[in-house]
Every structure is written in structure tokens, then in C-alpha cells.
Length: 278
Image (cartoon, rainbow, N blue to C red):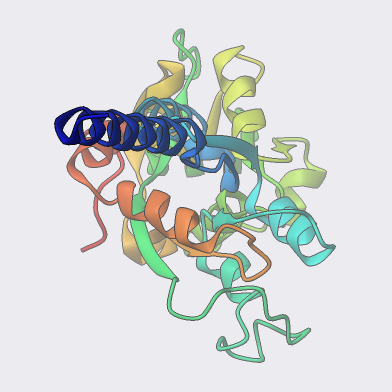
């Protein structure tokens, strides 16, 4: 066999082996691992986080986000009892503090340690709003009007239970106006909801004359807000967020929280009345 023929055969064999190797590399390249992120978030974030979750999953096809929306107190208890969770976003500092070992022992009375160090931050601020049904038959136009109606016994107010942030903010408002909640409840002028969505529904269905809810929930439900509480009345409504240290997807959880601080998320949050923390 001629020298040129032998060299040509060798070249063909080398090329064939190279192409096979490349083909195998392409077919055996590892795919991006699928990740399921479990996010526990305050009920008042249902609409915004659902929208942002859909946007995020469209851009990150390997990530599936599963939301659990409820009162922050209920979510805190579920985390404490061992629920699978990657991220917690509370509507109040108290519920996050109760899970944070670095928080005061006066709040974290059980010495719980669920917040991953270095991941906690304040993500949003909301307002505590006095909302009325479309008809507003009672003619309530301010917190002062609410106070007058409660004292007269002429109106019905819906508020959150004492174990949920919106209820705790409402209790502060009642104390600010020197109103006795127990006496009002005994007089039959207060009804309760286990989370802010239940209170919102009572107002939406005109089962009550007014309700104290978050500004964002009033917007999402199409309710009229006649007044918002000042910081003097109930303090700032700050939402803390953190990765939970039992998470099996810490990097992905951090990435999603980072996304929630970006321009896309800012626009969605602002559309319903959330504001960045000053």
C-alpha cells in the first residue's frame, strides 16, 4: 500500500474517532438539575409573589417554586414543627424574630434557630389601611370616624386575630385611640379573621362596615381605602425575608430572594402599594 494511501486512511480514522467523541460529549452532557423551592410567605403577598414566581420560573426553567401563603404566625409554627421550607417572608418582625437565634430572648423565648445566618434582610414596607365596602353605608371616612362608630356601637369592624401581624397592628391602633378591644368584642362590634385575606373577604362581601387590612390587599381586592395608619399609631409595617437553615437549596433560595430586590420585582410590588424599606 502506498504511503499516501496509508496516511489518508489514518486521517479518516482519526476524524471518525474525534467526531464520535464529540457526539458522545454532546449526548452525555449533564442537564441543569431540577430544583423545587418552597417559599412560605405572608398571605398579603399572594398576588405579587405568584406573579413574580411565574416570571422567575419562565426565566429559570429548572426551578419550580411552590408557595405556601398564610398568616405569618401560622407559617412560623409550621416551620418550627419541621415543615420543608427554603424561604420565609413574614409580614412582621416578631414572627421572624421568633425563629432567629440572634433575636432577643424576650421575643425568641424558645431559643429557636431556623434563620440562615447572613441571609435575613428587610424586603418591603406596607401600610395598615382602613378599608370599606363599595357601598360604605356607614359613611366611614377616617380612623377618627371608626373610633366614633365603635364607641357608639353603630358599626362592625373586621380585624385579624391576635396571633397574626395585621391583628397585632390593629391592636396597637385600638390602644392608640384608647379603645378596649375586649369590651368592643363583648359588645359585638368586632369580628375576626385568621389572616388578612379573611378580613379582606369580610369587607369585600360587605359582611362588616369596615376592616383594618394592608393597603396592598385593599388594592388587590378593589376596595376603597379611606385612611392609612401612621407609624405613631402602629409602627412601621416591615416585611423581613430570610433563607431557612433547613433548606436543601440555599444557593437557589438566595438567588430568588435577590431577584425579589430587582427592578422587575420592584415594579410589581409598587403596583399594589408596597414600598422599598426606607
